[in-house]
Image (cartoon, rainbow, N blue to C red):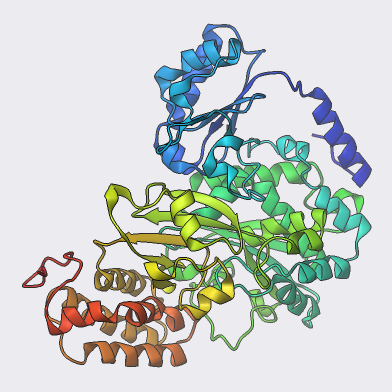
Length: 564
């Protein structure tokens, strides 16, 4: 690799990479996302290599191992380029036929393409499949095109051009203002405007400042950030470097989970390649701007993802949260100004800088701009990752992308935002995906995970599950959280066993009020959110467990609670 010393050299390198690529040469893009890996992706890759070697086609066909394509339910997914023929649920025994029929003879294998379950119509290309066609894949669109371990693939599609624009055509203040005008709101859960947070850190009275990627993503059912970061790490790195330039930071941190080996591998390679090209380290692109990045891993607990706990972990201390009146934007890592955003937030930054805030503002609603990554799980036909414009209805996400509820059952509710999010009933799913609308409904956006529940779901049991999870993940530092969670856990467990008592519901509401007012960190003050939202919309189900010792969903099986 040759170090790049200017924006002109970056563009020259990009054109050189493009000139060496034969647009007519067949290539096979094989999804290596977590779901496809679990479905036998490794054997598919081996089968393609063996078949290509067997036919002596090594110089005539490229194999590209990519990140997650999103349609997890239909993996392993293989795309044949340049025709962009998309094959779903590929098996090793399909490989010889794909090589001979599709790659060599240019014929489509009907049984491997998408078939509409209702009309029977087939879709040969990825862009024709309704799942992909109806999304707006601003961040995920390149996942199926690039090898995350190859920086040249990212440069080929315009990677790091936004960084060059920021460094050579914009001042740090202009970059900051562009992000503020775009009204990019944090995708990690709170929806706080990223530009305002950046500005606070930039203006904080300390010359040494830090920027951090929160890639912890510890919520059950949330896997959007991993899908994006693992598949396209340079998009996040580019956003982080641009943000550091705007804020005036020369040190960045990436904080992720200890149990993500594929992400770690791709990230290590991406950092090394970026540094070799001069996109990280000293005098980036010859601009005089210096910036380096360190990777840190969690200690295996959910609270590690809380902003101040995360920063303590980076310091080498136990990940215990600080009181919320201490603003990490001003007093973060080692009491220095520290700006933290999640993976998806940082990945939006290059898009805003390259295409402009006006373009970004054209997507979404009045106060929630851009697109949003959503992971769907639970009682839904397609457990999957989608990217849709803000303002898309929840109903469209569940039915058009998720494929609706399996086994002919009725949708009962959806839960948004993980263990500290909220639950809304089926009657409200016509509402849009919007930070403020969801907050009014008592169901925060969270990081973007949606749990779908059919009529057989017991909301009391679900509340117990969330509280049970958080009981084991609380740091235990403050009494309101530690003891409040335990009391709620005991009450809900008794309810599911037919041992609920009069006054239990009111007692939990009282506990929720105390915890919301007195807990130390956002985890302790948000623990009650799922319970309160369920009591708001499904109070009668809780009352049935207490007063009648009956589970309306016929889910709780202990004692006399099976229901009638």
